[in-house]
Amino acid sequence: MHKFTTRVELIGKPAATTYKKLHEAMAEKGFTRFFPDTHATYVTPEGEYLSRHNLKTNQVLELAREAASTVWKDFRIFTTITQERWEYFNLKQLD
View: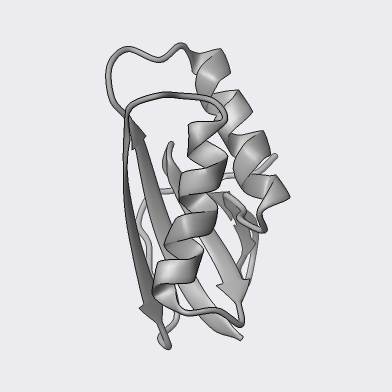
């Protein structure tokens, strides 16, 4: 399995409820905003998703495009693959 980070930016002025719908659509495609670490579970920044797939980067991008298109018309997506540990600073802990 490969690890991916995918950023989805909804262009314009989407309501918070629109991002909630995006989170749900992305979850249906295998993306998450939550990840456990040594002492807690953390939440990624708004519009940032993590996933593990046996796919190529362009296929993961297509999954994200399919999800985003169900909730918003105009958006940008950036997907990258990593073999390294995700590093972060000052992320919100899941309660």
